[in-house]
Length: 420
Image 1 (tube, rainbow, N blue to C red):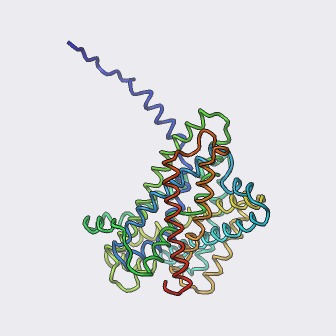
Image 2: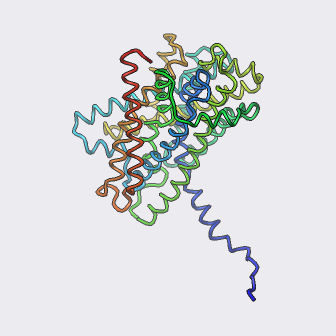
Image 3: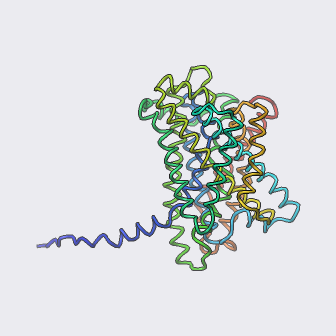
């Protein structure tokens, strides 16, 4: 007869300790994930949902899966090499090529900052009726304060602040779905890949640019170094890579849920109403359909996304400049330099929502320049050693790169011909 021994209370202690150690190593991916829920996402996803309903849900699902793979590769590259992606690219380019590469990366960083400052300014206008230029100035000033937290001694504090803002974004943008959830059948129908004309290609590229963020790819390789330092131990590298899988997976699930929620919110509540393809119009429509409380939650989520993402964007810009120009400037100065173009766009009266969508298209142009070198570096045994990507991982990364390049080529044709 088999005698079953009672389970001792401490049997689970090793597993708990492992889980706690893994949790203690997490954090950098949540900072990078802030970039995936910035105001550009709000504009792109609300525009897609308001105009085409549930048609483009599949774009967000595919983009989020691609983002998980790419962010994991970026973090792994930083852990294994102790160098950021821009620094490794810069080492392999001659001076003219390196400067040209920096120019395109800098345009990506400027487009990112434009989206974040515009979104925060719109949120302050919705909440307090502030002029857009004043709102943008306030967003810039607050982001300067947040950036002061980002140094090796305060890195954990910076991560906690970013995660706190991310949670505000989650609540602000998911609240509407709880009040008025969409039909499950419509959501599942949106998972079938299809497009409907040239404008849906433009929107799909915009959503892709808002979801797979070039600057987040660049900065993630740097964030893991700032958090964990440079290590030569293979065992510690394995431990950090294992924790990074959980970090990236959980962070991008949160970010993906927010992006999909934005599209579903617009598809369920805003389709067919006039002006709902702008953030201001969406705010008014949410207020009319679900009450001022939901509209306020939406605006607060937008403000939190702008404040958090602009800090991450400034950090990414500094990483790009340090790696490709080999020049380090204070983050505060970097913040001031990139703030000015965004304030100029607000001052000349460009439609802010459309400027947000176009900024995401610019980001989509920059994606191949980030993911193709990333794929080559993480597959190179001379760079990664025993941690080089497995054949299956390289295959999926290659397919993702091809998908993105083809979509961007189609977008270029549409823009040049005026079809978009």
